Structure formats: structure tokens, C-alpha cells
Image 1 (cartoon, rainbow, N blue to C red):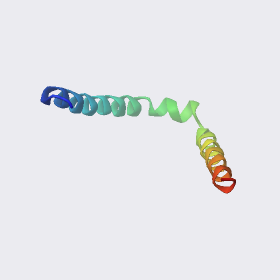
Image 2 (tube, rainbow, N blue to C red; image 1 turned 30 degrees about the vertical axis):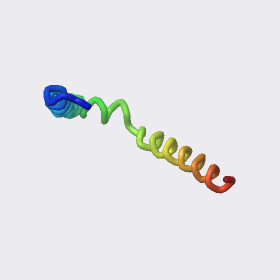
Image 3 (cartoon, helix red, strand yellow; image 1 turned 120 degrees about the vertical axis):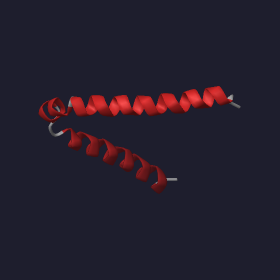
Image 4 (tube, rainbow, N blue to C red; image 1 turned 60 degrees about the vertical axis):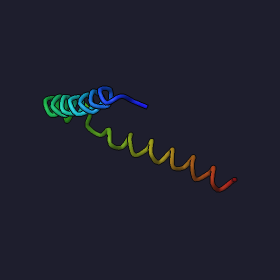
Length: 61
């Protein structure tokens, strides 16, 4: 399916990408705390809404 070189590239790319993203997140953490306060409630509402849609689907199937 994939050659050895492609697999090595993909794995290394993923590892380096994850490290860079984590570093940038930690660098911007102070700004995130100031500007995105309370966004956890939006996430919970979204997850609840998706859960409600799934529950309605399973109830009426």
C-alpha cells in the first residue's frame, strides 16, 4: 500500500507536527485564557446537541 519511505515520512511528519502544535499552544496559552474564557460551555452545548440528535435518531428508528 505505502512504501517504506512514505511510511517513515508520514510518521515523522505527524510527530514533528504534533510537537510544533503543542509548542505553539503553550506559547499562546496566556492569550487563550484571556480571550477564550467560557468557550467550554459552547463545546458542551455542541456535544449535547449532537447527542440529542443521535438519541432522537435511535428512539424513532
